[in-house]
Image (cartoon, rainbow over all chains, first blue to last red; front, side, top):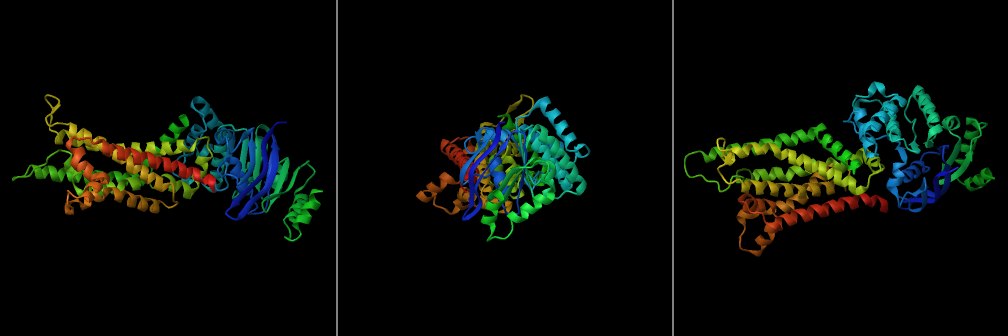
Length: 250
Length: 254
C-alpha cells in the first residue's frame, strides 16, 4: 500500500516552547486515522504543518511523495484541510464561497458546477445554498468548511476537530459522512472524543505533550472504554509518564 | 494563473460587499465634486480669476490631498489584517497558491477598485476641457488631463502598495490604516509645507523629489510627465509588493 503521509522526526518550537517533539508516524493510502490527545498536545500544530500553513523547526514531512517544505503547492493540491476554528467569509454566500474555493484549487467550468452540487448534497447544505455565511449557525458553518475541504476531490483530508461544537444529531451525521469518505479518501482527523475514534477510524495515534504515545490500528475489538483506559494511563501523572509510555508500547 | 484570477474576482467583489468601499466612494466623490463645482463657479464670476490648467481645479487644492492621504490606507487596511484576525488567512495560504500570487491578486483587485473610484471624474472632462459637441473635439488641450490621470494611476499604485504592506504586518485594521497614513505623510509633506519654504534651497529640492502634491501641481497637471516621479512611484510600489511577499513568507521563519 502506498504511503500517503510520512512524518519523520517532526519538531516544532514556538520560541522556547516545544509544541511538537520528534514526532514520527506514517499513514497509508485509504486509512482513516484518528489523532487523539489532550488539549495542547500538539495535534493542531502537527496538522497545520502537514497542511503547509506552518513550517517545522526540524524534521521531514512527505505527503503523497512530495515534501511539504520544498513542494508546498503540489502538496496542497492533494489536501483538503479543515481547521478547528472553521474560518469563513461572512459576507459571501455558501455557493459563492464554494465556487471561489474550487477556483483556487484548480476546478473550473462544468466540473466545478458538478463538484459543488455533489459536496452541497453530501454535506447537507441544499437548504442554505444561497444564504449568507454570516447568518449560518455553527453546525452549518462546519459543514461549509467540510464541503470546502471536499470540493476539489483531494486524496487526503485533514480535519481538525470536525465535530467540535455540533449537536448530537449533527455529530452522528458527520461521523457517518467521515466513514463513507474514508472509503474513497485518506482521512486524518483530530479529536478528543474517544468514541469518535473507535467508531470512524481504523487507526489511532495518541499524542501527548508533543510526542507520539501510541500508534496502532484498531481491530474492531477495541471499545471506547479500552481506549479511554489507555488514554488516561498515557496522559496521567507527569512523573510516571516515560515509564508508562514504555509500558504501553511494549 | 486561473487561481489568481479567481482570487482577484473574489477580492474585487469583497470590496463592493463591504460598507467601507461605499463610504470611501461617497466621500471621495463629494470632495472632488465639491471642488469641481466650487472652483468652476469661481472661474465664471466677475473679476480676475484664473486657472492655469484644468486639472488643477481638483488636484491643486490641499483638501483633495488630505482625502488622497486617507483613502489608500482605508482601502488597503483590510487586505491582510482582517484575514489574519479572522483566521481566513490560514485558508488562503493552505490553498495551492503561491505567496506572490496571493499578493499580486490582492493588489490588482485593490488597484482596480481605485481606478473605478476615479471613473466618475471623467464626467467633469467635457466641462473642464470645453468639449464641443458639434465637432466632437476638445477645445482646450486635453493632454494635461491625460497626464494627470497617468500620474494619478501610478501615484495611487504606490500608496496602495504601501498600505497593503503595512496591512500584512499587523492584525488590527485600524493600526494598519494609521501606520499607512503615517508612511504616506512622508510623501505628502512638501504639498503642505511648500508655501513657507524658500524654493531655491536644497531642502526644498530634496522635498520636491518625494512630495506627491508638488509633482502634480508643478508637472502632471501641466502636461509634463517627469520620469523621475514615475520611477519613484514604480520603484516604491514594486519594493512594497516585494516586502509584502516576504512578510507573508516570514511565517516560515518563526
